[in-house]
Image (tube, rainbow, N blue to C red; front, top):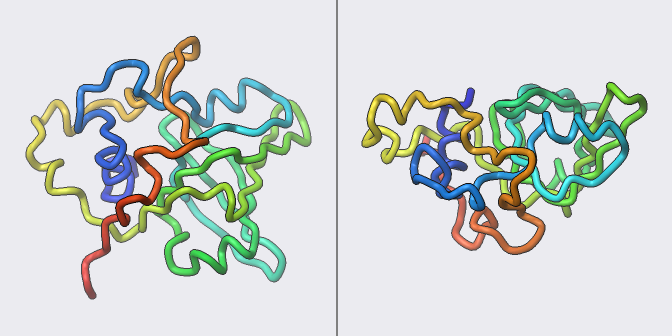
Length: 176
């Protein structure tokens, strides 16, 4: 999943490895493992996740989300699903900011995602970027966790304008 078009397009858009040799202060600061370590209700300043699967009901969309460090459950508000009806599907990548984490127990965490939390959606049908083919074999198969900063570092967040904000339109999916 982390070697497919949507995730690789996000990495390319954010100038993250393997597409760019990035200094530590430009790596992503937050990931699923780091928010689970907190173990309490909180807001995560920024998070990039891949939609593993989703189930719609009349009142809410329940999703399973993942990044290279782990998985987490989430609920996406119906208005957000109305705003992104074809984009938020299994395989899509969501760039989130200021997302609330509900922790009913120290070992269970659920992201509550609204329209205001979604900065950008990378469509599940995006092909691998052509720049990926130009990378060395070692770069193409590097560990996906190399995009994260160590827990003590400063890192990048998306709570303000960022390179992942949709100033430039997201790449389009190929025409069917």
